[in-house]
Length: 401
Image (cartoon, rainbow, N blue to C red):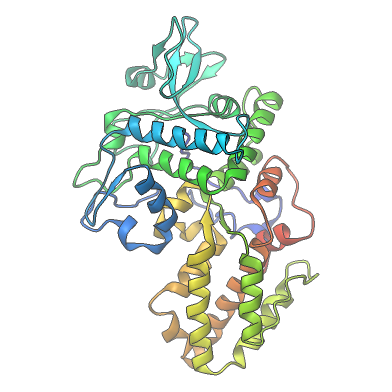
């Protein structure tokens, strides 16, 4: 429900050097055009979708070459909830850390009530209906819903939860999911992903990053306590970045990448003290310039394999938006460049090869720093209005562009 079409302000991290990373090039985020219902299913054809595709299959979502279909949306969410119950029983997740899929009701006072999907509705409440969404009826001190934006114009849907109500639900360990039919069934000519699948991407991110689920719930508790009227824009923007855009690397990625670089006699300079790490990028570029053409090609292949093996996106857009990441995440911009069909051709051309080696160096530098960050740290940063202290977070966000 909380899919926002936001323009990420330069001030989000209080430094113009970070502008490119945070997608503030003067325009809004691109909508997640995944063409779920087109002739070619990206969950089958795009490696960047692999983690989310595995989650969908575990949830019994039907994936074919032509279509991704949720035949019983409620059953899918209850299956996700059952998986969380298993993780709690095994001690991998605390009951106060989990975020379950939920239904939304309205009580007699007109306030929203969130209930774990599968549990009975509280006495005196009625299900929140699409008609109530359309009316933008106010529940409590502010409007719960605002008009549909570009993300939802192809679905028969006219509003989303306010920041406060959304974070209130998350703080209670509940993720509101709308099962309105128009949100879970696409049409042959639809070029947009139904919102239900976007919400499933959030749930998939929770299971991939259990610490991220815990950190998000803790962050939501802090938000509703500190900001009962909604968080300041700078914090809202940062939370959007983490929840929608952030890609991380899995355990062992840093050591694996260092070993890969050492095998090509490339100094990783992972602890480079330079403020914006420009020296590190240039150092790696100079190493790359001395590699024979075949070694460069081999390194590109191994970097692409590393990225596909260790990339574990948390953000929902990062899990499903594929090529729409071009204005969002620095690591995904660079990895898409390296994985393109024409990159090796550029690498072997005298003039273009210089630019291609710089892109390789930027990817390596960004990956070294990103692989030293963790999801808890990202949420801690999101709740702050300051730049991160010098270290891998700072170098990743504000590294040489």
